[in-house]
Length: 261
Image 1: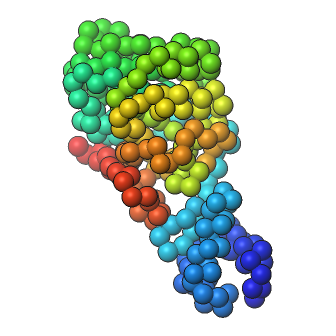
Image 2: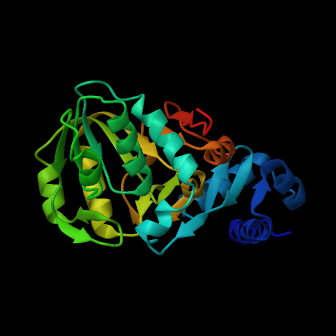
Image 3: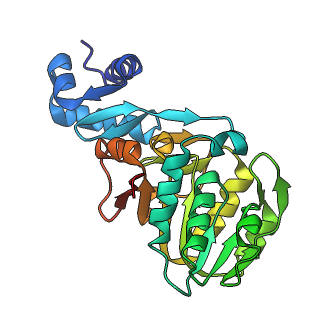
């Protein structure tokens, strides 16, 4: 077997493509090199965006190049999203100012916050928030106006980012299309990435990412922020299982939403 790094890398990628995952110890034995060498190989492949590092190995990186339709997304994993929303709502305090971006999971977070009757300020580009908050006097709703995008039920772009730049929130609830420990948060739409990035940059407290398991380990086209800007990930059981296989950074809190609660 080739001891040249490029040859090993190609072989490792072929195994991951075939099996989905690889193990450091098995690769070291098969390629007749040290486990340290294999770890360096996997670290380099992860750095190049070709794999996702896991505990003891690596896994295939899942890509999401096409923006799904909002109604399609809303129909997927409804009970998981509702559970995530309920759990996130318990992290919110009276008087909080919140950034909440667009998405079907963040929509459920807004719904749960409304249901708890908490008095908060919500700054969002999620158009459907109007429907949820229109008769809620305890909610101060600020829309980050911009160009309306029917496909995502949101507004985004330079006007949204300009409005966001004038407000500092003490918490952010962020939905994603991709959550990767190496590639960070990502989305298939540049304007959405810019608006969400502005929200995170103007949050002085915790950044809470909400994502079902189908978004964990996924990389989309446009990076929003690196994973080190995230304080909490709220996900479902499937997402928790995927995260368990990854080498998470210290300080990242993982909360698993239970559909039964």
